[in-house]
Image 1 (spheres, one colour):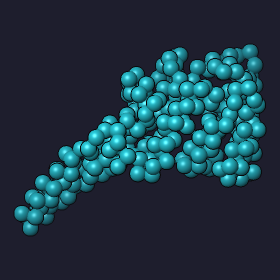
Image 2 (image 1 turned 90 degrees about the vertical axis):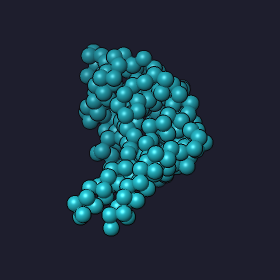
Image 3 (image 1 turned 30 degrees about the vertical axis):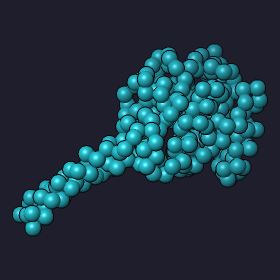
Image 4 (image 1 turned 180 degrees about the horizontal axis):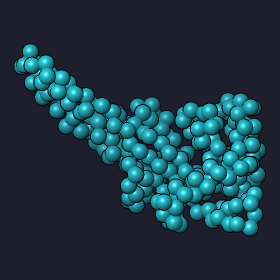
Length: 238
């Protein structure tokens, strides 16, 4: 009996275990559509902690950058000009694990940058402003700048280039949002306006986060019913 009980408990665990959704965002730091996506679609959903715990997030700032070999210190032409390269590299350094920032800290910092940056202005003064707003220490800010302006930033940015090219070369649309490592244009386009709508489609747990009720109707009860049936079987065996 204990053998069957163990198997049934494992089944319940498999059914009720939280399944995270891989979300990869390919974007540019000064792209108006990228900025609108972050500030109006992604981050408002992300702020809900019940939603956030379902997201396995990867941010890839590169977009439609074009590599060049003529200048070893300025190795890319960015879609919206030189300051976008500065912004892309700075955000790449924020995202890199060497920054020491938590994912929440990273998203807070980038959200501020996407709200306040301007194509007509130098990028680093905006970085200074946002560092103050999100309470990033001077030491961390200086480390991020050093990263963005040096070899480390180039190395991280080259990794972003490789990740982007592995998806599409060149990237067709900025931003592009990929769920569970499978590009679907309809999902990406919908997510730009309503990230939560697409995310909730990929969340298999039941009940889903309450925020999903407003975009996908009543939560699915399949997993909950399976758990109840399994629990009933255990009760009958005891």
